[in-house]
Image (cartoon, rainbow, N blue to C red; front, top):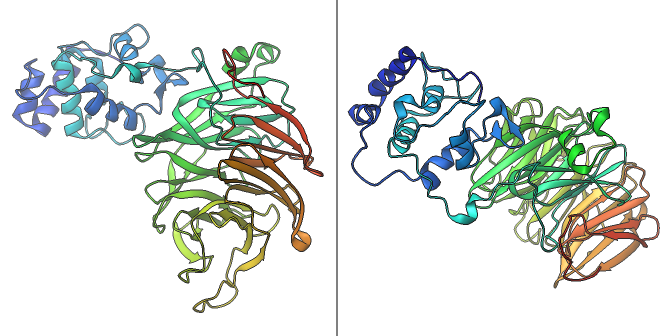
Length: 491
C-alpha cells in the first residue's frame, strides 16, 4: 500500500466522515469503544472484504506499496516499515485512513470504488476489538514465489498450453502455474498466485502474457495476467526460482464467489474472456483488468469462451447445453448457435475453440461428439433445425473435456474421460478422418497442439503430462510436472 501518512488533521477528517455516514454506533468505535454484541470475525467478515477489494494489488506476487493483505501476519507487519493496523486503536490505524473516502474518493482501493460505510465500520470495529485472527489453522498457510507449494503426491492436472513460439509449456498446479521447457526437460519458472485451484490458462497470441483463471471453490474467483517473456538477462541462466522472479503478475482481478473457467484471448492480445459459475460470461482489458463485457444469457456454469477471428464477437459454452454468440462492443447476446430443440443436444458443452483462419467453432461436451459450427447464422431459424452445424466426428467414449484446432486449422485434438480412463484422439478435418487414438489410464482434462503441429500434449487425473507424436500418436515423453518430495509410485 503506497502513500501512507498519519496526521492529527487527517485522522480527525476520517472519523468526522464516518460519524456522519454511519451514525452514532461508528462514532463510539472511533472513540476506541467496542460496540456491544458479537465480536467481528476476521475470517468470516473482514477477510472476505480484503479478498474482494484489496488482494488484487496487495498479495505476495504483486505487493503494491510492499503491503500484503493475504495473511494476518503480513497485515500486522505493515508496509515499508510503517504499522498499518494498531490493535485496539482504529483512530491511529493507517489502514482505516486509507480506505475512508474524502470528498467521495479514497486512497484505497486504488483506482476503484471506495468501500461502503458498512464495510469501513466493520473493519474499524474489528481493529477496535483487538484485530484478532480467528482463521482455522489450515487457512493460515500462504504460498508465494519465495515459498512455493511442496507436493507430497501428484495433483490432478486441469489445464496446459504452449507458448506461441513453442519454447514453453504451461501446466496448472496447486496455487501455481508451472512453466516447463516444451520438450519436458525441466521447469523454467513457477508462477505462484492466490488461486488455490487453476481451472484454465492460455498464452496471449503475442506471447508476452499468460492468462489464468481459477480461485477457491465456493469462496472466490480470480483472473491473473502474468508477464512471461521479459526476463532480465542476469536471470536467464539462473535457477528456476531466480527465473520465476523475472516473471511478474501484472493484473489480479477478483470476480464472483466461485472458481472461473474457460479463459481465452482476443487475437490482438488486448482482451481476456472467461466463464463463471454464476452463469455469466465476462471479459476484461488485459492491461488494466477493467471489465468491458458482461453477459448473463446462459442458464448454468459457463465453461469455455473463444473470440472470433476479428475479435468482434465472443462465443461461450455452458452446462446449459448451448453455444452462444455475443457482440463484444455492445455486450449484446446475438444467437444460440446450436439447436435449441429439446433433446437435440445430449448434455452440457465443456470446450470451444475458434478456427485460426475463419469463424468456425469446434465444440465438445457430454455427448462425446466433436462438432464444428459456423459462427454466424445464414438462414432463419426454424423449429428443429441445427442449421449452423457444419461437421461432426465419430463419438469418443464418455465426455469431452478439451478440444482444439491445430495452428493450420486442418486437424483437431480431443481429450475425454469414461469410467476412470481417458482417451486422446486426433482427427483430420477433411473427410472427418480419425488419424489415431491413444487410451490413457486416467481421465484427460486438457489437450493442446504445439505451434508447429508436431506434438499433441495432454494431462488429467493421472497427474502426468503426456507428449505424443501428432502424426502417429506414439508417446514420446511422460513427465510429472511438479517437484515432489517423494514419489509413491513410478510412471
